[in-house]
Amino acid sequence: MGSKSRQVIALAAVGCMGKYVCEELLADDRFDVIVISRTRQEWFTNRSIPIYESDYSLPSVLSILESTRATTLISFLNVNDGRFITIHCAFIAACLASTNCKRFMPSEYCGNIEAFPDRPRFYGSTREPIRKVLRGVRGLEWTLLECGWFMDYFLKPEKSHMRPVPDEFPIDLDKWTVRIRGTGDELQSWTLGREVGKAAVELCAAEKWEPVTYVVGQWGTFNEAVKIMEDFYERPMLKKTYTSANEIRFFVQANLHNEHEYQVQALMCDEFSIDGATACPEEKTKRQRETFFKDIKFSSIKEVLQKAEEVDFL
Image (cartoon, rainbow, N blue to C red):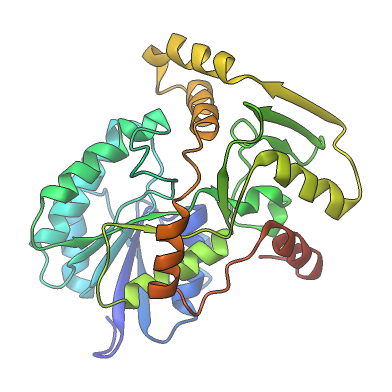
């Protein structure tokens, strides 16, 4: 699998975000891509992407890494319970035991995890344990790729691989309403999924990684984002409501015992937003942009809205 001059990049548990990384790897002649999945999926076979079926156990994943001579494993596993820890521990162990795969990106795509390692709270109980494991390993290079909110949530679903998350994201495009968490003036960051995918590919080519890597298209507040949407479409929101920070914190605390329920996790995303934890640190993000991503043009919300008017799919 792969030529001597092309790295093989293995993608595991590919979902919405992972499809962007697939497409960007396919377009880059520096890499070959293989997918590790529980089931065969038409989206990959239609693009002639090799699929290796796996139960995500150590022996299964290690066998695939060895047979394909993969050099990097990137995970997109999106579960928010103990399975995340079990499977990622298997991924790490497989990389450590493999001959060639000595780079690993776990499934993250969050915000300022250095200042807010436990936000959202279900990341604190799933992602943070894996971060601690990685800090203790030797012989494996790794990075945590963070991007804030996906800017795709400002778009109609047919324009993006990313699925809408109406219980988490304040703006409901179908109803043209907004439910602001907190005051709406809390700092956020947003990045287009396509551009996060491009960033992941550039990291595969980078000589050296940092433990945490940030990418951002735009920083701002949700009050500012709503104004951008209203101005672009020349249409005021039909309804604006606000949920106070005190209400959000009260409901989160009252439901900590039900952390694995989706509606409780949505409340934890509200808390994530009002804490400003989605906003990646600007100085570090801009420095890393110059170091790793000089060739990527990161888009603003307005630029993404304009692109969506001009093309069928972003």
